[in-house]
Length: 341
Ligand SMILES: [Zn+2]
Image 1: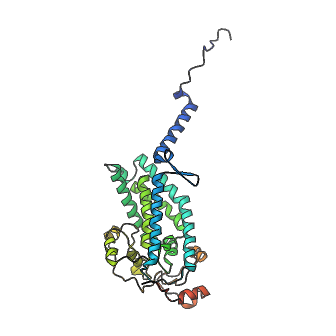
Image 2: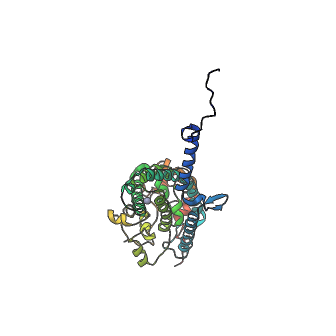
Image 3: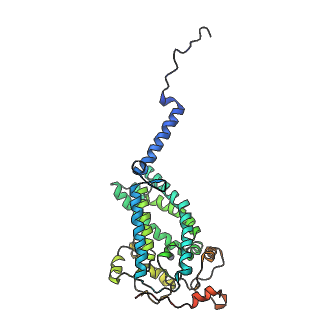
């Protein structure tokens, strides 16, 4: 006690040396970085349903929604192909499968790929990030590579038997319209998540490039699955750059040599590059789907399809093997639903 040197005053708390304070500073810095990475959302957001959304995101979503609505209306007014089935069973099936797929995608693939894109940009990983030049040019490269690798993924979903089981759920639709764009198995979305992450890693797509590509992809998929009859000259002109309803209609025809073409999902260059582009088949009077499944599969059989015994997709099943429930019988014998000329 005596002689012990009592501190005259508490030592100055040097913020930089105090671990607790350092932690606080680090947290503050991280929060600030996160806010910057997400743009001006926290500064000038619009509140939608209690959530603060950036005006750019809201404008993009509104534009996408309006474009999707325009496609849905237009394909009813100017149909490209005659429909085989009434909407009654088919539309609710596709919407229900789509809701499950979107839930799976939003829970796994979207957050994982977004986080990875942020990491790639921060650490300079991937082709686009390794290139010199302005950010917009690197974003363009990231976008193009995301689009190209999606072509590769589509080929794999047809060529790898385990992936084809899942993709088959999409191809058994007996009609092709914008609702087919929703008809994917939720497990297909989960299985594609690691590939999507690999796409981001290889391409080096930044979060901006990834979001622009995602919006573009959504619209492109809705457009090329649609039953929209564009003037043939327009369709051919558009097909120089993007996948059109006529192009993708050939991919969904129930003949393997046709299904083995037009794999592009966004830009159509990739099919031209690989010699898989074709536009030489008329759309009317061509069965859509696969040969082995000529009955409508609603939600439950569609979900079970990848995990059940497979038929050879390109062989018509012997009549005795096909379920002849009332619905199946109707699907196999129903005349084409007349459409407007
Ligand atoms: Zn396909």
